Length: 478
Image (cartoon, rainbow, N blue to C red; front, side):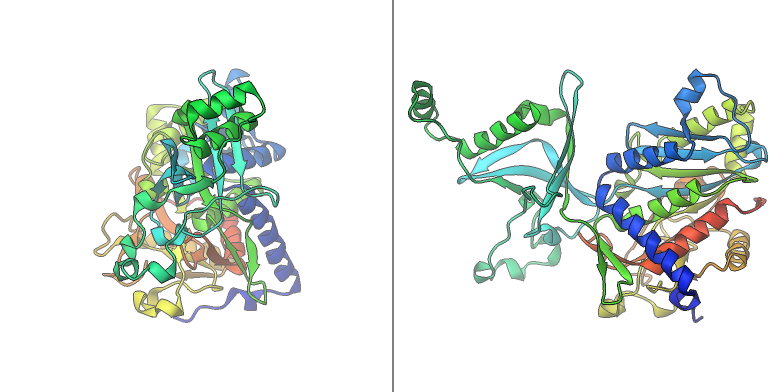
């Protein structure tokens, strides 16, 4: 089936709206490279749009009614936003769910060391990456260091023009005969992804007695490492031991950019899945007067299996919904179960865009194309649909009608050729409640690379589709 290119459906005004939306998204993407940064930005914008914190509403014993807006944050890495609809919550919610974590390098807990006069941070990669893509690339450090006193130090180095950047070194091609014989998965080993952070020894003032004593006592041992630690102490008041209670993420440095002579695409880090998270968040902010209660759920840890207290497998969403129902005066255990089972969800996650350079990995009739709108995956998983949510045909038909009436451009796809690989999302986790769920997001080129590409029209259509979904009438789960 041939799909319409979304750009061909836009008049001059729509094209302008699409480009403006993309500019707003680039600002979000450039400033939100970690889960914590995403949550901070989203909460600030939510409060500007009339949302109040759930714990505050509980303290003040507020009663939520139609039009009420609340949000809840968990461990600064996941956030849920609700707007109460006119229908009882027990009849179900319309839910958008995306993840705000992305593949990267994480700094280990005992990371700082020196070898041959070069200081390093030892790392452990997070999520599915091609390790060789992270060498010889400008990198930035984002995250937090928490001292024993409880003070949190925010770290963001490498993004401003005057900031230093960091890098993982690579072997020069002149000496790479053995390296280039290895398969791609071992060209660079995981333990070789250590980040260069300094090369100048600590300076002693030889003109002072203390300087002479220090130089003689230390005899130059680990002088570069100690120089870096002294800089960190001066900048942030931290010691080497404070790395034990730090969460530092190594990400590609630099802001997202327009791509192509026509500026039709965006190239940037972390678009899986912040492109869908941003579109979902904007749709939530701009939806009003709803029949069904809406929820946008933005979670952590999807890239490593949705595990832990901030991943989708935790009880964060379920517990938060119970609190919301309580403030609406409608909580009961049975009512909560009914609300979950009667809900509908779009698992807002990206899809693999067809790449003509690697055409053999795709099946052309069932793949997503850049520029042809938001993409639906009836199922994901790998090979024999393993680990997948497989959406009901009735739910797909409802969404087809909804988006057609809203003039939203969409397409359907699978995750590459059947035996080539595959992937998963949070869809199967929400489907465990019995609700209807389908994957629906933005096609991405070079997914999981340090720099990924999306088409601006696909982003805009996803936002329009998510908004139409939140504003849609109830769908009865059967």
